[in-house]
Amino acid sequence: MDSAELLTSICCEHLFPFRIPKLYFADINRETTNYVLIVERIPFGRRGKVVKGKVTEKIERKPFEILPVCGKYQDYLLEDAPSIYYALFREMAHLAAWDHQGRYDAFLGPMTKYTEQEYLDQVIRVRKPQKQKKMEVLKGGCQSMIEKGIDFALHVASQIFTASGRDRAKLEKMKKEIVEIAPYFDDIRSYMNNSSDWTAAMHMNLQADNAWFWHDEMGDLDVGVFDWCGFGRAPFVMNFMGCLSGAEADMLDAHEEGLMKMFCDEYERYGGPHLEPSEMLLKYHLQWPSFAMDACQWVERDIYVQCPREEWSTVKSMLDDKFVDRWNVRCRGTTLVNAFEFWHRRNFSKIFNDWISGPGKEYRSVYSA
Image 1 (spheres, rainbow, N blue to C red):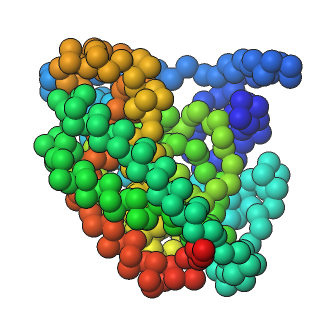
Image 2: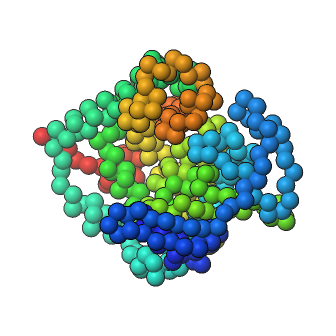
Image 3: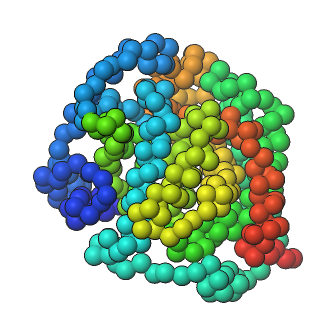
C-alpha cells in the first residue's frame, strides 16, 4: 500500500480531474518498505475562534485562499460541513467517471466491463450452499462484537454518547437486528459489485482531512486531494462509508439523499454510466449493519489501548483533551458515537428485509444442515 501511494503521485498527478499536491521526490526501500514522499506544502488558512467545539468567528477570505485544516473526525471544526461533503462527493464522482472513460488505464489496466446478468450467472448462481453452523458462528461473532460497543456506551463512556445512542432498549433492538442480518453480509457486499457500472477507481477514504478546500472568484468551493494509499478500483459505494464515517448524525440525516444524487449526476455528467440515486442510497444503507458492527470491534482493539476502561470516568466529553489528543480514541470513538446515534434514525432492518425478499433475493445465501 505504501508503494501504491508513491506510484499514484508519480504517475497520476496529471490524470486526475482535480489537484493533488505537486510531487518533488519519491523513493522507497524495497527491503524495509520505508519511504519518502516530498510534495508541495499546502498553505492552510487561519481558523476563526472556536468556543465549546464550534467555530464562532468568521474569517473573511480572498478567492483561492485555502480554508483551515480539519483534523480527522473533527467535523465540528468545519465552517460549513455539508458543503465540504458535497464537494468531496462531487470529486469522487468525477474520479470514478473518468475511469470509465479509460483515463487511468495506463496505470490500473483496462477496466473489465460486465452486466448484472453476467455477474449473477458467473458469480452468484454458482455458489454452493453454506452450512447452518456457519450461520450460527457468524451470528455469535457479531453479537459478541456489538456487545462490546454497547457496554462501552452504557457503562464506560456514556457521557460522550447522545441520549438515543446510550438508550439500552434501542441498543438491544439494534443488536438483535444486526445479528439477524450478519449471515448475509457477504451477500450485501456482492450486491455492491453487481455491475461494472458500480465499480471504478476510487480514493480509499476521502474524508475532510484528506483534502484541502478553497473558494474560487465566483464563490464556488473547489477541492484538492491527498493521501493516496490504497488507490485502486473498487465498488465505490463501499468507499462512501470511509468518507462519511466521521459525519455527524444530523448532517447525514439532512443530506444523505442529496449526496447520493450529487454523485449520480456528476458521475454521468463526467462520462460515467447512468445510476439511479435511489439504488445508490439503498446500497449505502445496506452497508450500515456491518459498519455498525465493525465500529464496535475497535473498543477493545484501539480505544482501551490508548484510554483504559478505568480512565474513562475522568473524560468529561468528546472535547476533552484525553479524547481529542489520542488518535484512535478520537477516531474510533467518534465513529461509534455517530453510528449509535444514526442507527435509530433509519429502519435498517426493514431496508434489509425488503431488499433480501425483493431485488436482493437472488443474492441471498442458502444455509443448510
